[in-house]
Image (cartoon, rainbow over all chains, first blue to last red; front, side, top):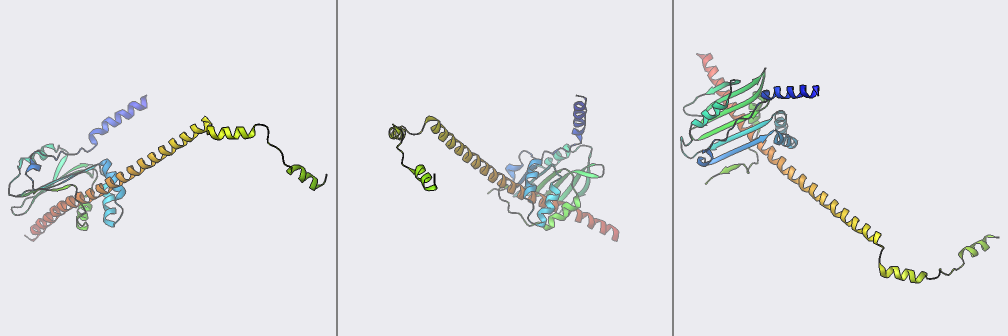
Length: 173
Length: 103
């Protein structure tokens, strides 16, 4: 009984340490977007995906990253016209980032995309990542939950080809 | 008794017991005993259950494979998007850093 109580106390104490996903689903965005990419992968789906990531070296690298994660969430929207989405959406994402989140990159450009990168750390380890990329006609929100190496993640982008991916990419006429 | 005598004695024709033919004919008409019929149904039921289990397991495996392949594609797409955005930010930061170094 005493052991059980101790275990319950430890589990409850550890709850706030577990990184929580950010809500990236903003009302109204999907309706206005001409093209949309939605990826929602929780820990269970990531474990399942890891079983199938073994073909190429790229997939093996991806598997090494994914195995430690608790979630990957991506929302990317393209619009037909400039300024078609409400910038308040970005503020709604900011509002969810607690004091343990730190902005590590803020790239502002008049011509290209504005990019903000936020990380959540436990000691030296990054355990959460939020990327917000805003362009006049495109908005991308990324949330990665779990320990992640940014350099390794950045290295991966150059190695991937565009995957065979149809189901979640919704192109509207 | 020599061997030939023993063989003759062992192989000599014997008439079946009284009523043997009638009993065989009656069994043929009546069919197998109820216990045997029950056993047959149990075997059929077991075979059907095994088939259903195997079918279910196969369907589950196929569904899991499809879900896994779909999840794999989604992981690759998500990491591609996230990686490209982080990469872009890194390059921008490096460019700003190199400009600052030149100035």
